Image (spheres, rainbow, N blue to C red):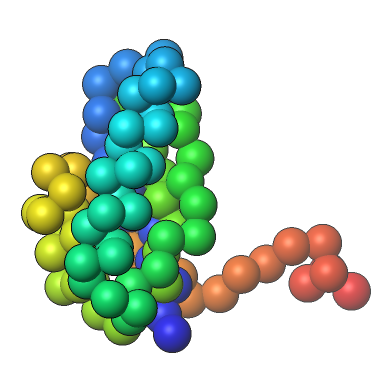
Amino acid sequence: MPKFIIERNIPNAGNLSAENLRAISQKSREVLCSLGTEIQWIHSYVAGDKIYCIYLAPSEELIREHARLGGFPANSITEVSAIIDLSTAE
């Protein structure tokens, strides 16, 4: 299954309260449940004015549908071509 990085521009995202982040997470989960098992949210990073999300999905179009239904921005969607870490150096 392809892996994608979604960049969401959300002003002041890094200062969102735990309650706000919980509400965003709950809305995302609700939409994911309605879309079925083809799309999976792995996790997200909240930093500065952005939220970077990691998803598994068969297509960019399904990720865009999730964003549309959830009312989330999806300013950039990039398919991951490789993953590297310390073990890659060996």
